[in-house]
Length: 431
Image 1 (cartoon, rainbow, N blue to C red):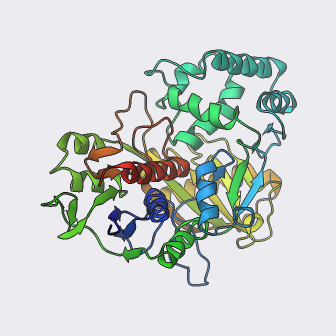
Image 2: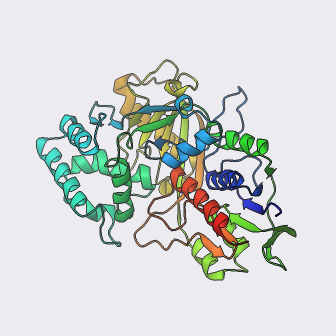
Image 3: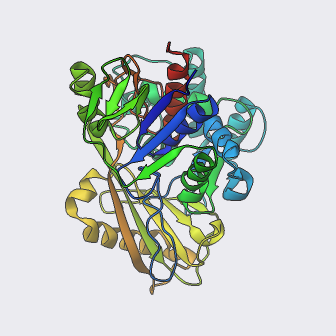
């Protein structure tokens, strides 16, 4: 029996996952990507003039990303070498913060809260009591609830120093608008899951080295056809079954491009699905890369208290992560108000925020902005009651992407899981 042909449209993390798993299952895979490089919304940019390679944003992984770590291992990417694993820690410039030690989830959480600095005994008891209520409820809540409503009774210090930064980091949506149901699922599968699930995995290599480049090399070595820099114009049903992509016949197709691009291709065949895929609102993320030669923070990732004039919630020390010494990435999540003001204004505000927040730690007055990057559609707005489309589009036509039906926000793990699920579903489909 001839080998079945599969087209995967889009070489982001979902498309790469689908292509690798389908190749392993025996399909003849053609991977198409409109951009000149793979990675999608988690990619490396072209090298700078001095050879430094920046990413389109400062991404992190956590220990609960088990499917992502498994895929990296399968394509030859050594996670131990490429990622710095450390316990979850939210350390602020004034030394306050929370750090989770190793061990069973609830003991770890309780010990971390007990040892947290900057909180009163009342703050700590209130947080533990709230977590216990969430546990008894199975980490479920009414679908229309926001994170702000869910946590309304918590003390301001807990909200400002833990809940709000975790929410915007995980969901890229402010707590006032973010889905409490999704937030609770994230907490369950990270903070309250197996040992190591909440660990931070900080990239110490460009994003391209984590998955995109190893996956492309693996696919080439296993006979897949790669077509980068090629946009698909039209998708048609095949006369004898299957699909025709720009006139070329395939037994099945995975749409792993952006939600909008996938909706464009699917619309003639599944208009209702396309309407749902095209109906998302998005949140941007801005990353401001600064150079502060000679300065070293106490931790590789430090939390910042954002506010009306302070855009960034986190700063990452690239020098501690295998990058250039004295280079730092300031991350602005939920960045729509700042994108509206422009990158120059955002960078200036971050520069002022760094001076004010990090000045007591010796942040140099000579620090300057190296580059600002805005990913304007970084993630969908993860709001309550969001209508996310299913993976099945039409017979032999599946979608893959972090925006599809599922319990998680827009994350690398969500993208990888959706890609693997699409490959498995197509492989189970009848010839």
